[in-house]
Image 1: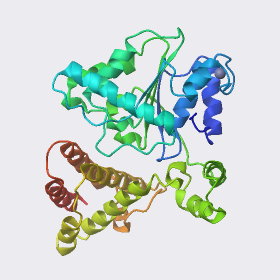
Image 2: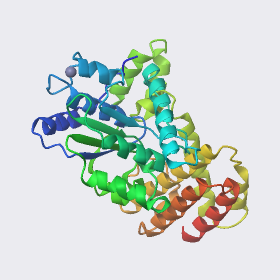
Image 3: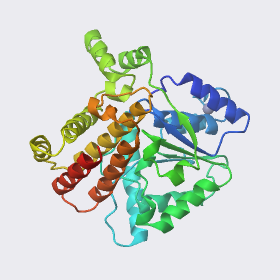
Image 4: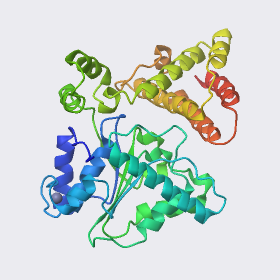
Length: 362
Ligand SMILES: [Zn+2]
């Protein structure tokens, strides 16, 4: 199945196309914006524009290169999605394992291009970083430009876990090979490692217009009733991903995070104890997703304390802080728990410790 057409982001497309034509497109870009609005789809559009044999304001859609990108089979397009951490002991075998896992994901996306978000525990591990390096060191197959898309770049391994791989990645982004474009995407730039963020040109994508979400749903879900479509458009807040229901898990994570924060701000006591014992995390992915939602909610609250508009529901007492400092401190605690969650620590224990820590700073 070909990729669904890109919806919206007309102004950004125009700016990107101008930069491509003017040969002034930065070699490392960071697309940011809420979940399900098409960040990776826009990255694929840009790849198609650059690889297209005709060259214009939009990819022509009919040349050989355009067809190959549409089928996710262009040899100079490398798309990296978060994957489960490889199990092999030998580093080289880990890289092979990562390559196989990615190939399997791409095979699935060829069949179903409207993919669901990666599991909360999936990441760009050291093996993926080595795979990126390995591919970046090769020459172009078609003799033209090459495009590397790294989706959910906030899941790139932190430096401490492998300084060698992390440094190599930084070097790659600092001096990308000639003719190579790197497009990283993330929900929230604050979650991307600062060393990586500082090397990328940020491009913020806005939510889609309701009309854009509506017309996408009409086209792709022809069996949905007009009432169902309207209901989804209203819930989606400008996100096709959410409208399609891929965001149900995400919604659950945000609700748990909000409940936990509400209990935390009430202080240590029965409410907090209750909240901490309430949620039994059987799946690590679910726990990690809750931590991500927690960090995002705290980030929104921090924006709120600085007088910026808050884009999602935040427990009101969090906004009483006069400066974002306590909220940023809380975000650091969550980031530490997120890292520990990737190891073998029991989620329940992590949550109990985190709850105490948050109650202290908030
Ligand atoms: Zn073309």
